[in-house]
Image (cartoon, rainbow, N blue to C red; front, side, top):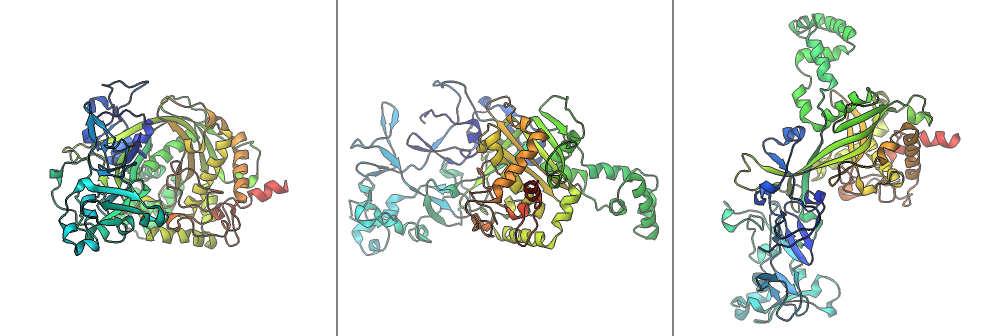
Length: 599
């Protein structure tokens, strides 16, 4: 194994160049093996109890890193050469191994030309496996090979040549693999047709390129298909992230404890839903400031348990943010510092101020991101875990990084949001995306697009685009975290926009400064004004089927899309009409721009 030194950003080792991804480095095509290949003594352990509570047993480790220049013995990540098949860019000769020169791999042909990785590889349709295409076998198959004895018995793999024929245009028909030993030739147009590899006798090996051949217990039943080596669908990462915060109990859980501790609670339980239970539940509700329905639900055991609530990372974060918002200036220190700001006395459009219930200036936050695994070709394919070693069932190792940063938290008024989202036009508009999400293969990876989620998600994108001009951070450096669920005991309605860096112990305060209400409200108005007209209007604003699987409505690159690394949903579930309104729907902030323009 040869050590090829190349620098990657620490965050890139999670995504997009994590375990199982193809990395192009100095003309080499490499793939990162799973964490069982890591030298653990050089992989720093990362602690995040909230994240491990979600992942289960195992540990988080940061990929080996180094500062300044790397020496021969500097700890580094291992990468596997893939694909093994290459062709000479000068003479076109195909070879599966590069030669050695003075003990090192020499990536050059006998003619002196440079060897380039083959453009196509074979991916399993549902098993998430990938492998080299056996070009010797493939080149001696096809329609002409069936009748030619010479072709069927040719094993001269050293005579394969890859050519691009100028007289056949620019399509796949111009890319040809020819055997100079028997004369058979096939074009790449035959390679990509449905069922082509299976007809040619090429089957899935059931493993990843770095796994030894004897590691496969049973053959993979899924069909192989040929795909371009650099296609984005070859690697779909599944990562999970959590903010390192002091976990707070949800308000519903605290209210349930108070109800159970009330002196009359046993009478409600004993009557088991009878008329006396309803009367006593009303007494308890009046005294504790809750609804009688809540008391009856606790008595019947129907409320969501605290343990279940805490399993959801966002629920715990939401409760922690609410506690910080009500505390004013935060002097606690640590890795979660949030100053709660009031809108009292703040000038701006009243229609906007009425819908915002609080602002938090997040002065410091620690985020931990971990790679669970990846899929290939299909969103419904098998998830390949990031650790394939013998200890993966007992104590798997997850690649992880910790990032420190700052941000802005916005809480919206629950009462006004709930009233808006009950409108028939709003429900109908969101229902379009709900139906498409269910039909899409991405359903399990996306939030339920209820009206509040779509509106707040779109608003977060609009604000990120505006903050990129004012904060000093590029748009791709900003991240979003959407808290928008109405089916919880503690309903959530807020957004967090933050930046986090893995190679620094914090950031420079550009976002925190803009979190001041006097600066943030004008920025929100500017973001709405930017989105009021898109360069693709009227096509964009009248559209209800954009992006992959048509999972966007009125949202495109001209108005609402941001870098996919910044978005939780990969730029899906967006709609400007649910923010600014349309001909048949009232937007959440429909009247804000009208008020501004009148004044």
